[in-house]
Image 1: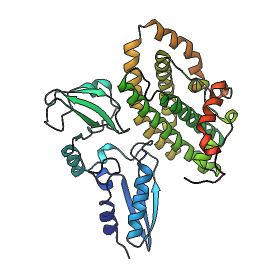
Image 2: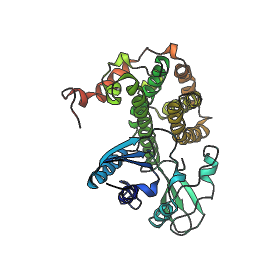
Image 3: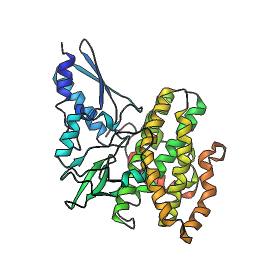
Image 4: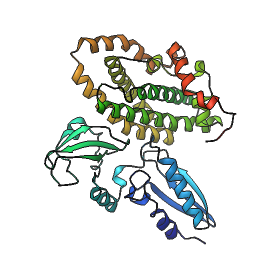
Length: 161
Length: 197
């Protein structure tokens, strides 16, 4: 019989479809694993609701559980339980090393334009805080575009949700 | 989930789906490259919200999100006329965006207070994404607020925005919805019922 640890290890091997430097476990979207004989249930939270990678993630998890010889059941949780705060410390470091600025911590209130335009955001390339907001939106729903005036490098900043 | 709640969720889902379609029409033709990116992303979010809301309603009604989104006739949709308009003018597009986000924030706040934890939880998640739409709308409002064209667009569209928060005023549609529906459902209608993709 498959163990919970084996399932977590297998899920930790699945790369995020759009940002393959981090795994689904690093991303914090796997909320729980429950084993009942040959059936393995995974509770999964979407990142952004319009993210086209959700189905790819769901299918990849099901495939990897089948590869362990078990029957997958992927339960999608449509609630507010995922936040960018759930990205692991290791995941944040992997993002930074690949040129993606990790998200700021979630505050009690929603983000504001003043906050997004502040210099609290450091460049993932040179560490400077001389950065500016170029666009609240970016190539995927989870990212904004910023520009670092110190090293003259445009980069992608994870939105906080 | 009682019928009144189902109807409310369907109204919001229809608004988000149809507005998502209209927003996506700016992809590639917005006045600034950054706005091509912004409106495409906003459109993607709105359609994602519609899908999640349809899924909740579909479960209560024993159907599927796709069937709710695409298998109804145009007169069965519950969206407000404001989201149906094919606006070719940037000032009007920003005015609609601003008015829509303002009303949407109010109704999401109401949904977050409901006793049903699934609906309240989904509303809270949607609201976190919408916060970025509101920042974007506010940024453009601040930029254009003293432009006569923008003021005129706000005055023209404001009466229609009131429908967003009043169920009793829904049900009437513009001819533009039919054109949008023809395009939106074309591929699905071209295939036998039950085709999977």
